Length: 112
Image 1 (tube, rainbow, N blue to C red):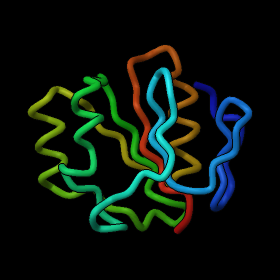
Image 2 (cartoon, one colour):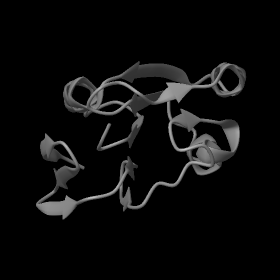
Image 3 (cartoon, rainbow, N blue to C red):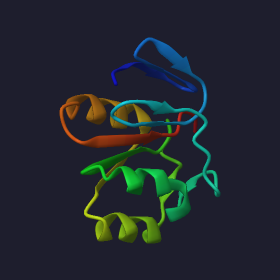
Image 4 (cartoon, one colour):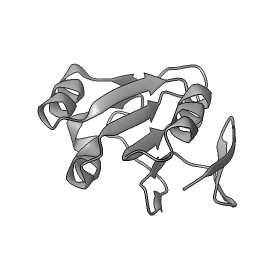
């Protein structure tokens, strides 16, 4: 999966535009990534990601970095040997692109 571009509220992946938060898996994009607490990533928000067993999860915390990763989520990722990088979404997209040949999943908040 290739991120073609990102701007506030919009991401283009493999030529397709998305206007809601996404999870990028190696073989597909899950649109409309919903989190129980909108600006916080909690364990229940990443069940499918844990099952996919990536080596790395990149969280795009929004254009202004307002999304936080809960301590419980960090502990769950650690317990499952999944590294975490959380950065503002523009930087997270760049990080994802640099690691395209690795076993990586990205969860990206597209707005604030």
